[in-house]
Amino acid sequence: MRTAQVLILDGDDTLWENNVYFEQSIEDFIDFVDHSRLTREQVRAALDEVEGLNAGVHGYGSAAFARNLRETYEHLTERDVEPAALDYLMGLARRITEAKLELLPEVAETLEYLQPRHRLLLFTKGQPEEQRLKVQLSGLIDRFDAVVVAREKDVPAYRELVAGHAIDRARAWMVGNSPRSDINPALEAGLHAIYIPHPHTWRLERADLAPANQRLLVLESFGRLREHF
Image (cartoon, rainbow, N blue to C red):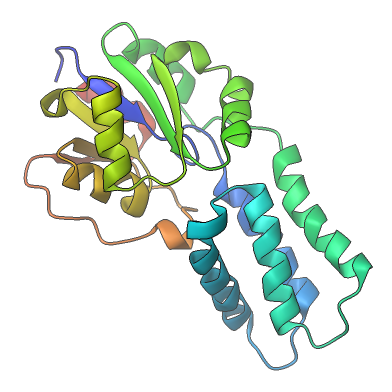
C-alpha cells in the first residue's frame, strides 16, 4: 500500500467532531420534553424512529434535525405546543451550526503526510452548503483532489463516485467511522475500506461490519494511516 492509492475520506466524525454536538442537543431535548411516563431512552428511541423515517425524505444536517425534533416533540409532548417551545427546539439545532469546528487528533498532520503519496478525495453526505462550509472551516480543502457531497452514501452512490472520478477499485480505500455509510456499502461496491471507530458515532450509523476478507482494515486512530500508506 506504499504505492499510490486512492483514499476516499469521510468528513463528519472521521476528520472533525460532529455527532457530539447533536448528542448534546438531544440530551437537552429529552430534558425539555420531561415526559411523565416515558424514560429518557424511550424518548430517544422515539426521536431515532422519526430520524430514521425522515432521512430518506429530508436528508441529514441541522435543518433536518430541527424538523425531527419538532415532529417528535409534537408527538410526545404532554402540554400545548407553543411558539416559545418551537423556538427553543430550533435553537437546539441552530447551535450545532454555530459550534466551532474541531479537527480530530492527528488529522491535519496525517493528511499532510498522505497528500504527496496518494490521491485524496472527500466523500461525505448531508446538506451540500452545510458540508462544504465545514470543509472550508476545516482548513483542509487543499488536501483533496475533489470534494463530493452525496444525499446518501449507499452502494449506488459509491458506484457513481467510482465512475465519475475514474477510480480503480483495486487501489481505492474508503476511510470512515460509520459501518452503515462508510464501510459496508463501500465494500459491497468493490472498494477496500478502513474503519476508524469513533465513540460518539450516531446510533443510526452503527451496524455490524460486513465480511470483507482482506479488503477491510480496522485502525484505532486516524494517525495510524501513516503506518500503512
